[in-house]
Length: 156
Ligand code: ATP
Ligand code: MG
Image 1 (cartoon, protein in one colour):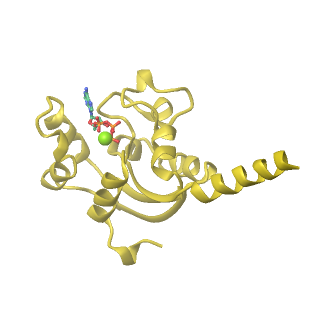
Image 2 (tube, protein in one colour; image 1 turned 90 degrees about the vertical axis):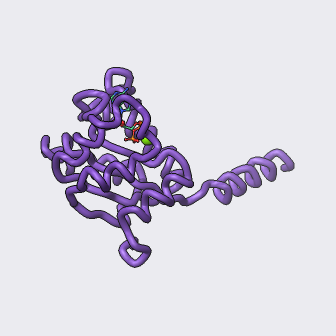
């Protein structure tokens, strides 16, 4: 009896502890150009991530430099800014249980040759720069990145 009570309490506490989060995803210019928007959105929905905001837009080099400011001293930064402003992107807010980690898992490694089979980057990325998707990597970056693209009234 005590054993079953323990199992029940463990299940209840894990359900209560699982956090509903929001995270920012970007479908990058290479994946938009290759007409992979629909397939990428399906992956999110099939994996329990709900789309609660979405917009297609083209960013100026100045705007994308601000977005990726943390990388400004890295050698790949100029190429990253040029690529990310080269064509339209799709900015998306995803909501779900552990959405930040779940999205990173679905994305796969930055370098597509190292990405796990079946991940978005293994399926759709062309190179480490042209790697199909972006995802927030922490609650702090998710908050900053979501407010970079959306006002609270635009998130459903
Ligand atoms: P993102 O922030 O876009 O989700 P990430 O978190 O997997 O990607 P970061 O280290 O934050 O990887 O790098 C940001 C982006 O800069 C990468 O997605 C990639 O487009 C580019 N990048 C990172 N490292 C390299 C590299 N060594 N060579 C070329 N481009 C790179
Ligand atoms: Mg990153």
